[in-house]
Each structure stands twice: as C-alpha cells, then as structure tokens.
Image 1 (cartoon, rainbow, N blue to C red):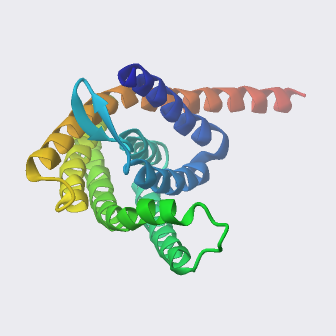
Image 2 (image 1 turned 180 degrees about the vertical axis):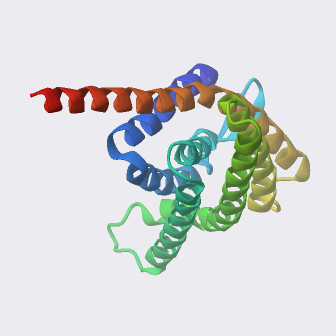
Length: 236
C-alpha cells in the first residue's frame, strides 16, 4: 500500500512543481522550495515501512526541491537556483525560531495540543538544524554538479538531472539521518533508515526526469504560442 501511495504522491508533488513554474514562473518556484522544505522537515518525523524496511517520510518533498532547482537552473539561471536554496534556508530558520518561542508559552487549562506540539517540535528542532545544514550544502552541490555537466554535455538533459540529483540527494540523506537521529536510534537502525531512504531517493530522482522534460517542453510551447500571437497582432 505504501509503495503505491508513494508513486501517486510523487506524481502529484512533481506535477505541482511543474504547474507552479508554468503559472508563476521562477517566483513560484522560489516560494515552493521554501514551503516544501518546511513541510518536509515536519513529515520526516514520521517513520514508515517499505518492503519490510523502515524509512522516514519527507523524501518526496525533499526530492521535489532538487527538481525545482534543476528547473530554475535549466530555464532561468544557476543564480536563481542558489537564491531558492538560500530563501528556503531562511524560511526554515524562521520556522524553527518561531516554533520554539511558541513552545515556551504556558498553555491554558483547556489546551489539548501543547504536549503533542512539544513532542513533535522538540525533536523537530534537532531535525530542523540538521536538515538546514544538509539542505543548503546538498542543494548548492547539486546546482554545481548540474552546471558542470551542462557545460560539458549541453544536449544531455537526462544525464545532468539524474547524476546531480542522485549524488547530492543520497549524500544529504546519509548525513542528515546520522546527525538527526544519532542517540535517538542505534547505529544499525540509522544506517538501515539512510540506506532505504537512499534507494527511495534514487527511484524518485529517476522519476523526476520526465517532469523536467515536461517543464522544458512547456517553455517551448509558450515561445511558439507567443510568436504566433505576435504575428496575428502584427497582421491585424
């Protein structure tokens, strides 16, 4: 059930990334990366089983950021890709600070959520700091690899997309899992979670390639459509 739900989730999330860029251009992707980073850091607190192995939620949302920054680099510039990463890091930092202040307040006598929030977001503080560090490093590394491969193999979109995403995503997954959960789980469990997560990340990275191609095709369609519209207006 989790596997089927995961594939459907990937299609929905990656489609949202393409849709956001289609209608809101690079500004939409800048907003999306910030929002998805916060969502991913909440979802990663939940553990699920895939084929008998434990992994953390959040992989799809984290992976969608790589798709978003690849689209930014491909259709706009690497400067815009880096800007998205920095804005997302600032957003996550603001989220962490505001949440920690909220937990300091004394709840009312009728409050029913404070204990749940403390349990979730106390762990999320550690996860958030680990994720913030790994997120910035891995995404900037992804953009660097993407641009290097693009210069050497300009016609191989699939190559730069997959190589940059797989390397940076898997590196982030192992480092993040270790720093976020050391002392919470034993080392064997941490390695197991990171390994299963990395396999999931590789599958997700391969699945995001059609959506990157779709995004570039939509750009071509827009250019052709705009040229036809200009010609029609000129004749009129």
